[in-house]
Image (cartoon, rainbow over all chains, first blue to last red; front, side):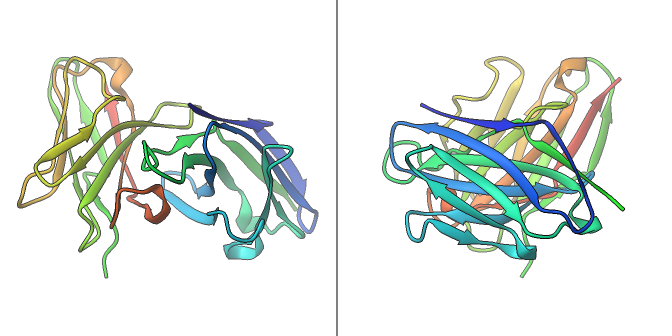
Length: 116
Length: 114
């Protein structure tokens, strides 16, 4: 069984400030981990994914995330927030071998607000 | 090189009517997944289909909901006798293999039941 907890349903930062969105996961098998972004009334866009290669993963739009097995975390960061980063962000997990590795389990999402 | 196409984007149905949601996967992708997003919730897995086969429907409500992915044409998610609680965004994704690694999501269909 897998689960995802996103700490903070709403995060507000100033433009130019550090963005930190937290994600902790639970998985009985080695995981694949993902961050998706959803703009209002749109679909999900993949930001980045961890697939058991490098633990620091770089994604699009300047975002990156670090897989920490000991902490079961996969927090998303960006050094300097931009107004266009305002959106909802979802962390997701799946298994990476056998079984139901096709099935994504999502967190409830974090709404990021960027203030001018 | 079109992505996953879902239509309609918005669908309004009265209680008791049927809703049909369509999903055309990325060309060459033979694996289709449906997810539902309820208000203020993350996405929840509903069903996984390959051509002409339902592989995993563990997330589908037992009644009123059905899904298909025929040999020709798009995948269809069908909801019969809709109720207010069915109001949600329904997302389709496709992948070239049976893994979450290569998912591509569509823009979703937002169903409103009035």
